[in-house]
Length: 53
Image (cartoon, rainbow, N blue to C red; front, side):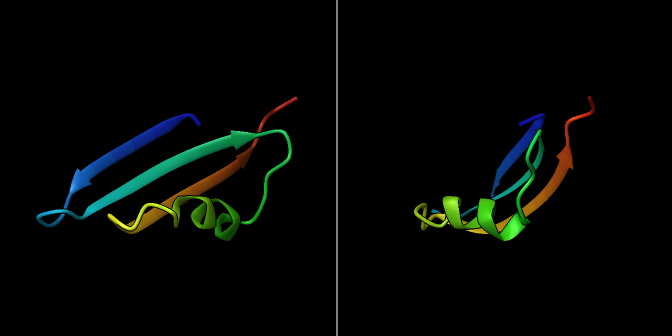
């Protein structure tokens, strides 16, 4: 991960924005599914990039 921002949007709810850099990128839905175990995350914005080289 190259960047992560998390902020509170409700009493026990959070929003996050993340930038992911990897040699083998997957669809953003894959990464969102990994975060789905955290019910307190109400909104996720992801940017997925292939690692140069």
